[in-house]
Each structure stands twice: as C-alpha cells, then as structure tokens.
Image (cartoon, rainbow, N blue to C red; front, side):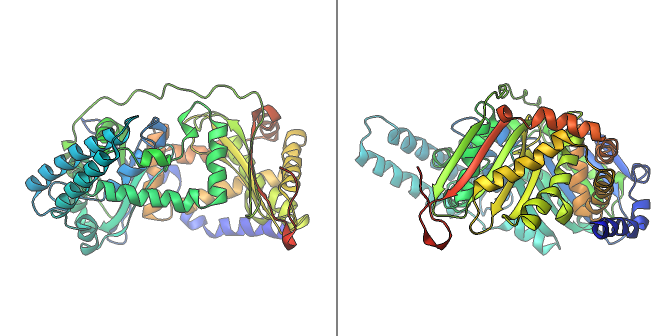
Length: 505
C-alpha cells in the first residue's frame, strides 16, 4: 500500500510543471466568456501551440426532458444532427422538403390506423406501403454523409456526440484556419436541421437498443434496476428509450423536441486551442447569433418521492452473475457532492481501493468491484451505486455481504489519514489530466458552465474535495447507506459452475 501511495505522489510531482499553468489564476487570464443577445453562452480558452482547436457544444437536454411516448427522442435527435441541413446533404432541398412532408403525412395515416382498436389489417398494409414509398422518393434527394465528409476533407477529427440522462454534447477538432467553417457548420445544423432518413435512423437506434439492452442480461437488469429506483422521476426511463416509443415517434415529434429544447439559452459552446477570443466571439455572434431567442423550458415538475423501503430486482438467467445496489443521494449541486466523490474514490480508485482489496484481492470472490455516484445523472436526486462481478463459483449473495461490510466501515469507522490524503492528491492529479488536451478542456469548461453557472467550478470542486473531513464521510455515509434507501439489482445464474443447476425460484 505504501508503494502505491508513493507512486501516486510521484506521478503528481512529475506533473508539477504542467500544474503551474493549470491553476485557476492561470486559466482566468486565458478564458473569456460571453452571453449572446439570444442567450447562448460562449466560453473561449486561448491555448497557443499546435494550430488546431477543439470545441464542445453542451445542450441542457437529455432523457430527463422526455415523457411517455417519446422516450429516446433526445438520443434520436442527436443522431439526426449529423444528417445535414437545408444546404448540406441534399441535391434539391425544395424537392426534398415536399417529399419529406409527404413522408410525414403518410406516416401519420399509417400510425393512426395501426393503433385503432379495431384496425383493418389490409388497410394498415396499404398505408404502410404508401409510407415506405414516400420514404423511397425522399431518399432520392439525399447526399449521404455530406456533413461528416466536409469536416473530414477540411482536416477535422473526432466528430462525435453523446446523449445522457442530463444532457447532449457535440464535439470535434479542426485546424485553426477553419474556425469560420466550424462556426457555420455547427450553428447551421441547429438552425436548420432536416429530418432526412429519420425512420432509417430510428431503426439504427432500435438495433442499438437490441444489442446493448435486450440482448444483454446486465443491460436488461440495469434498465429494470433504474426503473425500480425511480418510480416517478424521468431518471427511471432509459436514455435509449422504450422499444414501443422507438417504434412509434415521428420526425414531426423530433422537430417539436428541437424547437422546444435546442434554444440558445439552453446551450453553452466552449472553444479551446490556438485561437483568439476576439475572432471567435465575432464569428459566434455572426453565425450562432442567427439562432432565434426563445425562453428556457420550465424546470422538470415531477420529483422523486422519498424512498422508505428496500426495492429488489432479480433476473434469473443462464448468464454471468452480477450484483449492484444503489442508494439515493442529492443532486450534484448539493454541498455534500464532494463528500460522495471522496467516498467513491475510497471504494473504487485502483488497486488500493477498499472494494478491490476486499472483494478482488483478499477474498477473491469478485473479478471486478467498484462504487460511483451520479447514476443515471446528477442534475436531480440520483444514485450512489456499488457493484461487483463474481468469480466462478461465487454468488451475488457473497458480493452483497462483502460490499455491505465495506459500506458499514464507512458508517462506523473513521478513514485513515493516509487514505484521505491520497484521495485528495488523486483529485488534484485527475484535474490536471482532464485539462491536458484541448478536447478534454473544452468539455470540462462547457459542462461546468452549464451545470454550475461558472466554468471555474471545475477548480472549486477540487477545493471542496480538499476540505472534506473524516467526520463528513461518516455523517454522509450514515445518512445515505441505510436499507430503506436502497435498491438492489441481481443477475442470478440458473446454472452454477460445473453445470449444476441452481435451485430455488
């Protein structure tokens, strides 16, 4: 343990040169923020060096803003943002627009008929054919992947995006002399999105769901675990969406979602690299300033009611066993958020962590064990989750007992001075690593600005971790890790090692 601790310190010291230029005071000299008249927030960090820049567009909408019937739509719109605009991705937008309108009319007729209680199956088939014929006509106008090919041709790398329970993010990097091209492309796809190939892409997302959830025992467990933990709040819904919604929502629904949530006041754009803040701001004003100003959406109304009893989900399958338990914790802006991060580090950070040492190294009952806060997001009340994967011949019940023993230690015993010191050292080292690349820094700046209202919070959070005490850890653990606040998820194998069938129901 002593050797590992010294290694962490040594690693941190080797980054001392980088750290000198990575503190808050140094960044404040290089970071400029501005809120456009339409409400969009821009954060620019000048980082001279290689003639490249990276950006991150943070949109404050994820699965949290979905309702029954349109679950998965935030993720679906993320896919559509790569399909081009009225000028990109089409041979003739006037003709394509008319064709897409016919697709939507045909889909509405088909969808309405297939949902009737006493539907006419022959008519459903007829309307489905008309809808697919309309799609085929609209597809004749499509220039495949033109948006991405423009970025590739101009030296762009890392074109990608993600959707979570809390947010949607878009990012890539370009040479610095392509700054105006970036401002045009990134603003244009949110100003004038086109729902071309929507239903083909909907099938792609459905296949993602089949692969990651429906065909995966752990995927199915996590979905049901999440739904059991959150009975009222939208955190109980999967980001990918329920299968029935993926088979039903329309391009019209996606455009309405865009109109409501992809508004400037809901967006933060961070640009980092070999750029000048004045030039970036002028270009962002010119292009992103075109996005129409609209009021921010109202906050989510439904809050998760207090949990007063343990909830358990068990999947019995011929599959790798798995164990997880989650405890409700406050939103990420809560004063105790840093304490939960410290607890996570104590339980999970590397081979010196408590869960690894106990379950993997010493007892040898787990191949993997960890704990982390912020599932499935952190904008609202969320879960602190501990999980483990058993080694052959061991059961979820053994993992449960070992995990709870480590949790009870947090509740009843003070952590050591050495453990707490190493957690704080690792937090500082992790910040330096996150800020090391333009891509990582752009994401950190935009996310901190969006979630906390100030990009400086990424530094202040480390300061809050540094202020955490042993008493804080015991206080938070005692309040959080109690049976009535717990949700359990288990994949229980119906076949034990060696082929013996497991008994019980």
